[in-house]
Picture: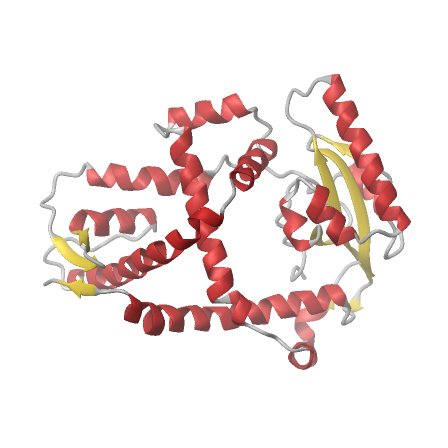
Length: 334
């Protein structure tokens, strides 16, 4: 049973290895490689007067892992049209998300890059060197992150924020799908605040990070809202979700994390725990035993997120095909 164990955080999970900005690097280097191909470049469509060429279609296919049939293949025309449709939608989304670019703060981009560096245990200079090895400028990488964040903000405003899942819908789903909530082993739902320590940190940096972690822990123990503390102080991706990491069974987290939380009851806060990532403050959100998982806040959040995601897919499709196409001038050419 793993419906709630797939945490996005890597800082406490045992045996995690991250690839440096992999998706970003692939998406940024794939297109130029295709553009260098020696084929006739023809205009296939335009969005608001901006042309989409056959090179663009090939680059989009490569970046998305799509292999187009060769010319002359009976499937080629339909496959190319399908890819072109997706690329037109992407161009519309890009133009819409441009409206959000100014809302992305430099500090947000800095934090995103710092998280990549921390997860891969590399310095900022090592990160820049890896970009250079892939023939990418640091400024280009930052702009790519800005564009991604702008698109995420756009989708939040236009899609997810419009999806409202009621408590009644959550309860109905829970009752209708009991098999999805069977717990096969004891597990804990954890939330964390991570005060990161950079690679090759000096002793004074480590001491400062530990002191900060101790101060934040005091606030949590005193009763300050843990989710708000995570949003304010944590250096982990989970800060956007109040520090929630999901469920973990025995042996699924670092040994020092396991030891720090094994005797805690729901609602209790751990001591400050050291790892290669920095200093952790853990909170036990729930403690489930084998059987049917209770309809607690963690289960409700899981169901709500699942239903929201499913509804968002339909909303997104409708928004692109019915709303965006009316807001943009699209032409296709045979």
